[in-house]
Amino acid sequence: MTERIVVVGAALFDGGRLLAARRSAPPELAGRWELPGGKVEQGEPPDAALVRELREELGVDTEAVARVPGEWPLKPPYVLQVWTARLRPGSADPKPLQDHDDLRWLTPDELWDVPWLDQDVPAVRELAAHWG
Image 1 (spheres, rainbow, N blue to C red):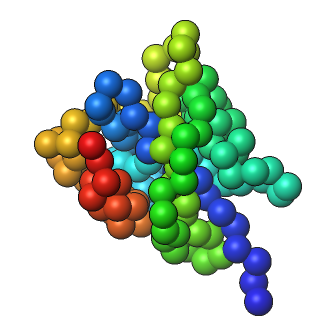
Image 2: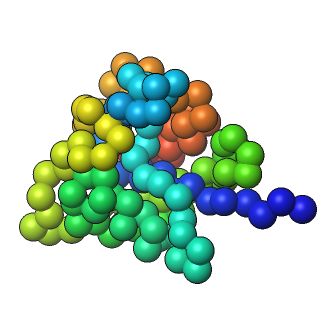
């Protein structure tokens, strides 16, 4: 059996809004939106990976809150797990530092205003069902 590689995505909430990040790379994903995050390193807890990835990609200090139920397949051997997260007090505002060229805070009514990556859509649907 091939070992799975977990990718953590952040459902980063602030003031009732969800942060979406527009990919700038690789070319086949550029211009589409995703939940920011990245790969869990060997031996790293997923919630710690989420905090590290958000620091690297967005320059923010966050804390993971809870894992969203479910797991979504990406390109094998990758699987997506999503965690809710929040900015820590005093954190800088998110900025697109790596792999992204734009960020948007979306209200529940704006959730589908951006073209999400196909692989993020099921996770975003799950978030939408439990938002609020």
